[in-house]
Image (cartoon, rainbow, N blue to C red):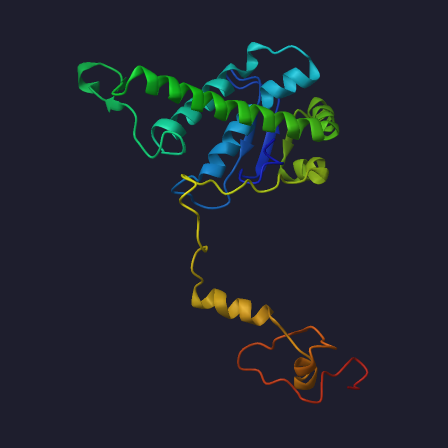
Amino acid sequence: MAAALRYTDPVTKVTILPRGRALGYTMVMPTEDKYSTTRNELLDQLAYAMGGRVAEELVFHDPTTGASNDIEKATAVARKMVTQYGMSASLGAIKFGQESSEMFLGRDVGHQRDYSESVAGAIDDEVRALIERAHDEAWEVLTEHRVTLDQLVLELLDKETLGAAELATVFAAVSKRPPREVWLSSEERAVGSGPVMTPAEEVALAGREMVPQDEAAAANGDDRREIEAPPLGVTPDPAGPVDGAGTR
C-alpha cells in the first residue's frame, strides 16, 4: 500500500520478526522535515492503515484481530480530520469538542462534547465514510498488485527482513495512484492558481523553454526545431554547434 500511494513516505524496511506485541512492522521514513500534514497525506494514512485488513480479506477470506491496532489508528485520524482539522465539507471548518487536561490531579486528558446529538451522528457518518473510502482504495491497490503482494510474502518468508534496496526491486512493477481530485470546502469556493514562483524557479523554467530555429520559421509558424535555451550569460554561436568531427 505504501509503495502505491502517492502522498506516503518511502518504504525503507519491512520485517516479519516480532517486536513486543507486534508480529512485524513496516517502516516508512520522510525524506525531509515536515511541520504540517496535508489532507491527501492523511487520506493516504487511512488507506495505508487498512492494508493489513484488506490483505486478510483477499488472501485468507477471513479477517483476524491482527488489524485491530491499525483500525484504531485509522479511526482516530479520521475523527480528527472531521472534528479538529476542518476537513469535512458538510460540517465545515469547526472544532468539535473541547479537550480538558487535569494531569496534576492524576486524571487523563479528557474530551468534553459541546455539540448536539444530531451533530454527533453527522460526525460518525463522516468518519465512517472516510474509513470506507480508505478501505475501498486499499482493496483496489492490493487487488491490482496481488502478484507483487505474493512476491513480497515469499521474499519475507525467505529473508524475514527487507531493506530499501530489496524493496525497490520487489516494488518495481507498482505504479503510483493517480492524484485525487482537488478537495473544495464548498462548491462556491473554487481554487485559483498555485503557489507563486521564486526568481530562481523562473530562471530555471526559462532555461528549459524551447526556442524556434530562426525568426523566419517563427514568423511562418512552421519548421520549428526544439533547442534548449542557452544558459544566462552565454551567447550562442550563430554558425551552429560543432560536432565531434569538427564540422558545423
